[in-house]
Length: 291
Image 1 (cartoon, rainbow, N blue to C red):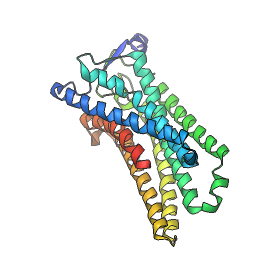
Image 2 (cartoon, rainbow, N blue to C red):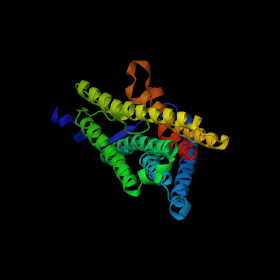
Image 3 (cartoon, helix red, strand yellow):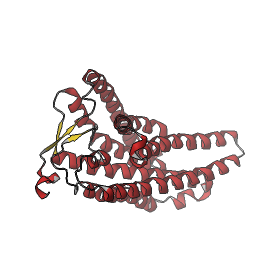
Image 4 (cartoon, rainbow, N blue to C red):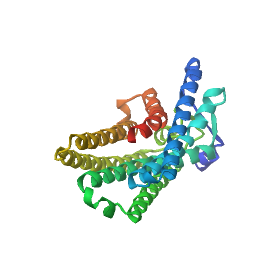
């Protein structure tokens, strides 16, 4: 069993849509355009937040962190995806797959926590406007950002380490566009019950807990917004709440579908396209939604 473990593999094969080769060029063009738009949108947000003194606020500080995360998140997977769609070679080195999975999970976990932090920031801005600058001081902002990045890293270390301890017995074909935990687990030739329990536990913690906090925050924001006498003020508060909820639904909805729903409720084609959706589409849509 030791000789057949994952350490003996030199490469994985990312299957993607290789069973539909006529669609590969269409996917390549669509993903490339989405990736370029993602780079443009997030880079613009970061530059504006740094260069415009009027945007040196907690909201744009967290938005810059979010955009930085988005840039790294997409860059960790999309270039390899484009390479595999461009030609017949669908391989990714073992080290590349491990790195992709670690980074993918790190930044995915960070994104969930950052959404909680941004919801808290909006809660304070709407519900405690007179104390906003006192509560959201630079020290707290940096602390919350650090918690988000380190929390995501902890998520990655736990899931990735457990995943690559599985014996793969020479299985190389990953039926997905990227190296993801569910797809890697399906390659295992041993008992995966512990890994599946670990995956469900960690994902439940990183989805249910943040999602609960976010929804409670937005309920309080909605109640506070209804008390605002100015129609313009109410509209602005509700628009902010609605745009952030769109982001929350896009992110957590796709993560819950991919990681927490039982395997029998979906097929592999659905899984890989949901994976493609939150890797490519949400990264392009989220920056514009958060503004």
